[in-house]
Image (cartoon, rainbow, N blue to C red; front, side, top):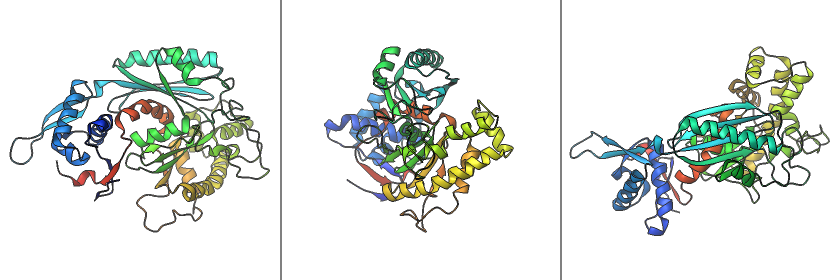
Length: 408
């Protein structure tokens, strides 16, 4: 792999042979998306493609409506270069998060800007009801955007196809065992749907739009109803052999501890640090049906149940962070998902001095733990990002090139 040491930001490089055409298109789209606008010569420098290859790709992408001309950049002597940017109206992707108690639907334009969002409660999570709700929500959002639909992604809670763990308990979706979700959802809406583990999709969302934008290797601990882990390795999601990589919710943190609400084992992390457990505790305290805004209000009021949950979650998440660091050696661990930012910040703060791990270096570019930036929409944004990710994200070599260090 070719490496440049200009700055520290990873930049995908092109491959000049014609057989790498699709890769080169993604390289060009990715580098333009990251910069906002660029001239052909600047694109060629960043991607290490020939000027002629860049000219051909740019003309092709403009012809398809994926890039647009932005006029000439006035700088220095000579003819100013024409600038190109991703065309927001070139298309849209839709993402749907199907959780155990709600459905979130969002639409992104080609530049990654949020164009529409809907959040609805789910009382019935059986396949028949979810497929009907999915079709209705998708149709509503698609009409509100108007642009050509480039793809649809759906995220659902894992794990997938594990005996004794699939579609059981309050943090998963009952009735889906043995059903090909991608096929069922595709048939329901009439076009191909990409289905992903919710935590993996959330990590993709943070990679494209949030705290992970400039981080090529990170772990994301995702708070859905349960708790999961998304892994970004060398800029792309790591899924494992069966799409279940990062199923940390069922790691035993307390031997012979509480029964897990999903899998029935004892002492799983999900039984101590999940949003479901927080809401269950609040229900026993006389506060049932607690929504996102209610959690914000209760946290501001320093409600004792919320405070107790934060302390307990931090107690068990701290060692989990150190374990992930020792196994995966990420640049940082991001916490995100269906919790208010203030609660997430408190969890991170109360982790205190994290256990020693391979990440315990004095010189670090990033803190060991960060809060995500995409909030409650994290997984749905990740779902919408899946088709976008495949379109604009290179999957071959990268080089370390400083984006601000190479002149236009």
